[in-house]
Image (cartoon, rainbow, N blue to C red):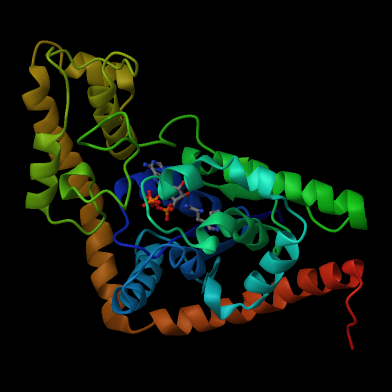
Length: 327
Ligand code: ATP
Ligand code: LTN
């Protein structure tokens, strides 16, 4: 069975961009592949975190993974910091990657822009991500479009390591959807929907109330026309809302255009509110059920046990190849 690995940071709330671009795809893959889905808490501390919030968000993300339909009997769900091999391989890979290639990472440039101080962890973030992936002999990595460059770096590092020390790593392939891999911010359709955007109406979180969802969608930027038409270049706001409608409402773009011909944005947005609210409702009630059941910790413990077992084998083979003494 082919292996899949992906991770989401337990920072803030999970939004529909994370869901459509990544997590929804995890659910689709779980029946056909051996999947590892990680809560990447080590990545989240590359920028300042409130410890209490980090703790709460990590368990919340585990419950959400299950609420969207990931089945712990089929997939391995775990927290990155529970598996020390991630930090260990990250160090070994840091010694096999170059500042020149990290300097090119656009996410680092964006996240450090205008900051007085930036952690070295934020700089080496992509190498830890490469370690996450390579530790599990991963074939496929489902992610949103913003992670494309990090995946390319991971491939480069693995190919270079294999050349230098002999075949060690499987070179992973990104799985990035042709459609929906970059959901845009509701308040500015030129930027991606992002957890770190402080405007709460820029995004829809999976656990948002119906009234919050309604407000955010009704406020969402469109344009001065009134035609519901998919045209990313000239109508980025409307096209973004149509993408969400298409994926959560399961209606082809052409049918959406026909349905709202002559009706304007008001009717379209009103229906989109319904679609999003009813799409998130089952996730929200399952989430409450899972939290109440108290099974999250047990699932994470079992997940970490399996993850440790699989990753230790790869870590040991890397150490052997590099010449470390293993007793
Ligand atoms: P931030 O923007 O604050 O760094 P984030 O929203 O990107 O955070 P992550 O935990 O870093 O959140 O991302 C989890 C997954 O969601 C990744 O696979 C990422 O590519 C995907 N993703 C993030 N934002 C979007 C988006 N707007 N559209 C589609 N996929 C997204
Ligand atoms: N950098 C990713 C999160 C992440 C990840 C991974 C994704 C960390 N390790 C391994 C896929 C595979 C992000 O979403 N910002």
